[in-house]
Length: 111
Image (tube, rainbow, N blue to C red; front, top):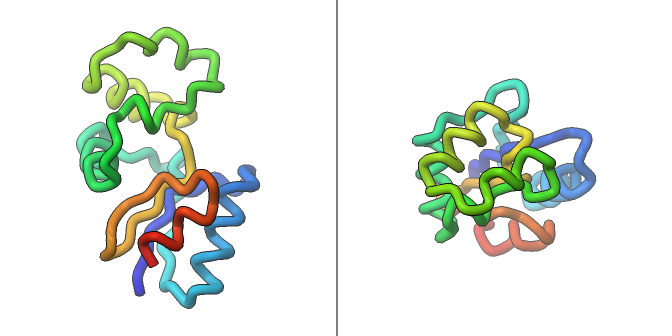
């Protein structure tokens, strides 16, 4: 099975999900989303595939996220594309769907 993980190597949760993907035998494409951020359209597609609103994928622990609390979806997506640290991780996509893998075991839903 092929899988794409939007990954931050400094994040323990992201590393745990990557390990679960490898253990499952997935052919993994790792996207360092901080260096190669997805576009607003790509984020919208991923969140729709996961059944999430963009604000559900917002990393609220980041100080700049507070300004987006009442923002419309398109503004949240644009902010995430411009400042990818605002994207909660890890996002994983397989042929079975998309999940925001918090906790890491959520990845099993799409394996």
